[in-house]
Amino acid sequence: MRKSVIAATAALALLATLAVPVLAAGFDQYGYNDTARVFVGPASGWCLAAGSSSDCMGIYSNDLLVMKWNAAWDACNLNGYDDPTYCLGAWLTNEWNGKVPGGSGQVWHYKIIWVGSAGSDSQYWVLGGYSIWGNYEVIMDQGIDPNIGPGHMWFARGTPNGFGAHS
Image 1: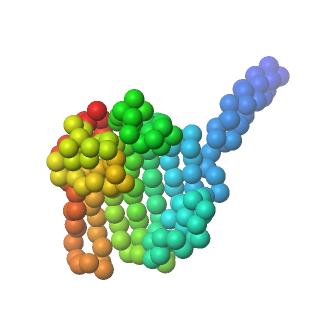
Image 2 (image 1 turned 45 degrees about the horizontal axis):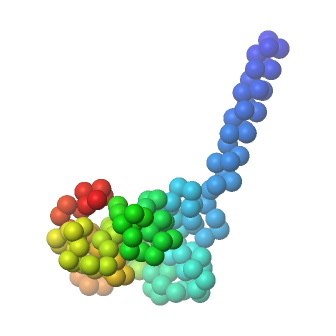
């Protein structure tokens, strides 16, 4: 019996030492987890992390925002936004949920990829998208907005719009 208790205690101690680095690399006060490359929180958290006021997104500030991105996105941001060595395959998703207390009422989903400074003339350009931030393309922009009208709307439906189909 004593060996079982000692073994169980040792196992718990081992698990605790493994869990501490995971917890240390978790979410910050704004909603970012840079290790996992994800943001989960109100848009006001994104505003505050960027050094702006918590209402920098206007009516969207209370909306729940989930952003996900890959390592190429980080590398591209660190290296000038236009070098395929770092940027090829970079992507970001934004998922907005305004169906929360004090939210905008909108629900929206975006997929954004790096295409380079050639824009729509880029070999990475996807038909059906639109340009954003100079070197990027929105390949999916869809959702609902009760302020515009009923039903589901699409503003970009790039084909193909799966990540990795472009690099």
